Image (cartoon, rainbow, N blue to C red):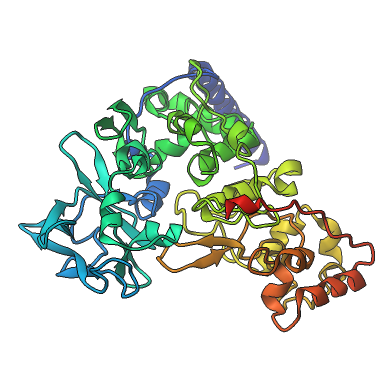
Length: 492
C-alpha cells in the first residue's frame, strides 16, 4: 500500500475515533458533586472490581467478624480452659474458672458461677479478629451482643483476660463476671461501629441491656471506606459511555469517581478521616456517635464526611494512663489507641500531604504498598526523602551513621517503637507515627527511660541518656532540647 493510501486510511481512522469519542461524551451522563446513596454490599462491588475484591476477601478487614466454625475459630475449643493465676487474691487462685467446648456444632465458653461450683455456658454468636487475638460474643435475650471476658492469644496459644492485663487489675472470678456488665461490653452498641459496615442502632437503653441493631455486612466492607455505592452501580451499568467517560475524567483529568468516594481524590482531612474513624480512638466518649454516623463521600444531606475536628480533641495530658490511650510523661502518644494521634501530631501531617495508603495497602490492609516501605530500608528512606531532598543528597551529614547501618534509616530515629500494645496478650511496642519527632534523650534524663523513652537509647543501651545528650550536642552544636510539659502526677 502506498504512503498516500496509508495517510488517507489513518485520517479516516482518526476521524472515526474522534467521532466515537464525541459520541461517547455526548451519551455519557453527568454525575452530581453531592449525593446520598444506599449501601449495596461488597459482593456487588466485586462484580466489576474483581482484582481488588479478591485481595480484600483475604484481608483482616473482610474477615474481622465471622460466625464460629472450623475456619474462623482460632481458640482452643477442644476442652480448652482458663485458670486464675496463682497470685490472684481470689480464693479460687490456680483453679479452672472457664472452659470452652463444642456441642452439636455450636461453640461455647462456660464461666464458673460466682456463687456455685457449676459452670454457666454461653453460646458463641460471633468471633472477632484472628491475627493477634480473638474475641467472643454471645447474644442476650434483649438483643445485646455481649463481649465475653476471655480472649484467645495467638502468640501465647492460651486464653487470657485482655482487660485485666490492659488495666493492671486483679484477675478474679467476680471481676470476670463484672466485665460483662459495663456499657462497653455491649459489643454491638460500642465496638461494632468499627467492626461492621453501615451499622445502625435502631434501639437501645441507657444501661446497654437492650439493643436492636442492623448492619450491611459483617467486617469492614468496601463501602466502609468508599461510601454507599448504589448510585455508582446504577451509573456504571446504565450505559457503556458512562464507563468510558468516567475512566477518562478520573485517570486523565483527576476528577472524582462517579457517585463514590476515593481517598486520593479527597482533601487530606477527609481522606484521613476514612482511617481515623477506627484508628483514631483518642476522642471524648460523648462524641463517639459522630464516628458511628460518619460516611465517606460527598453527602448532600449533611452526613459527616470530615472527622478532622476530632483528631486532636482530647488533650495530650502528660502521664495519662487511661487504657489504650496512654500518654508518656513528656506528652507524647503512648497507647495503641493513639497510633493515628501520633501521626497527626507530626509536622509531616501539618505541612505535607502524607496519606495512610502511601505505605499501607488499603485492600490488603496488613500488606505494604511496596516491599520495604513498612520497615527501615532504602525504600522507606526514599519515601521520606522525596520531600526532604536536602537530606537525600547527603544523608550521613544528617544521620551521623554509615549508610545502610542501624541509625541511618529514617524509621530508626523518627518512627521508633514507642507505642505500647497488648494485641497478642503480650506487652509489646510498635512504631510511633509521629514522624517528625526528634530523638530526645533529654526527656529520658528528666523523666527516666521507663516514662519517656528515646530513639537513641533504643539502640545504644550501653550509654546513659545523659551521655547521649552530650553526643547530640557534639553532633549538632545548635541543639536545644524542647521544653516538655510537667506530667499530671494525680493521674497515676
